[in-house]
Image 1: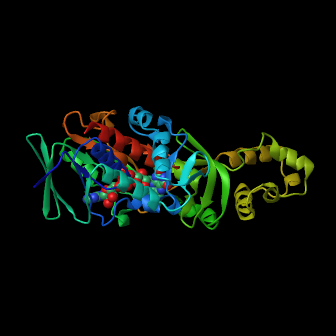
Image 2: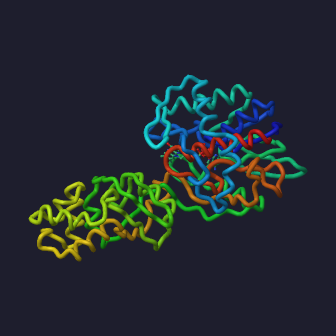
Image 3: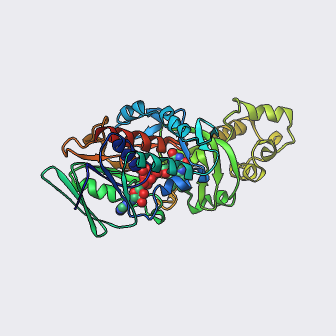
Length: 387
Ligand code: FDA
């Protein structure tokens, strides 16, 4: 049995950050993972360039049963703090859009940076072995990893959520949390494409067509691109809305978010011979499908009332997804280890001293665009400061 000050389960963004910070504070830390390599999700993120943070990080861009929980960690370890580390390591970066910061080169630089910070803190990283039994007695945790055993007074759960299982993602964090008496907010796939039922087949035939929209689900609205796929709907606006969408609910799409009221009747006066499909400033195939669904042809042959109705429907088009593409395609998981049992300052379970949970394993889920990594860094940092 090897003895440490802290055992971190999971060598992803949150676990490596926690290990680096605690190590640099003089703690002896071991990080255990079943994957052969650390930071696999970092490597594939942002199309291989890692959208590592967002300049507009704010607690209201996160979903959680307790919307206040993320405030402390996000406030104490900010996007600017992470950017300082990126710049200290000489990693070139750029803002793509909407405050999203990406590496100019490969995401590998972010993994190497975190590994460098872990090395600076003397953290030990052990990979490629299955996690075995986890014990807890007399204020110490014991963990089996392959044929080795580890013991420490602190255990940090940083094994993420179950999205993309083929990359080694599992829901083990939830099993461990439950064993220690913590609750789990029901996990569901998020930032995920939505599937449309058979009666929406007309739209599935538009596979590959994208257009800027405002997509609404629940009380959330996102002005970005939507993409039709052979299974349903995707694109950033839909991925964002998917985190708020619940089975049985509609997703409302405004296909003409910039149009002013009465634009169709004005178009009729200006060009009565034009058809609705020709008038819609949308990709041609999409415009045809929408016009067909609305049953509107030549504007001049359509009553003002019918045009007003078409205008209303185009700005509030209701899709009724029958599901999502599931964990296999989801970027993250909404839900996870319930925050009510954790300290928002340290990520430690109040009733199990020494037990911490960080990153995606916790019921805090960010918007698309670097927010989820910022949560991984901030929560990992908070735990690293405390252990
Ligand atoms: P993460 O999942 O990164 O790490 C968990 C670690 O635990 C892994 O190393 C895993 O092997 C290990 N583990 C899991 N189960 C285990 C078990 N049973 N035994 C042992 N080890 C186990 N976010 C963002 O902000 N910007 C972006 O650009 C992207 N892009 C992106 C693309 C794709 C395709 C995906 C799937 C996700 C993203 N994300 C993202 C989301 C982001 O990747 C995610 O929020 C963070 O990686 C979460 O970090 P964690 O450290 O919490 O978990």
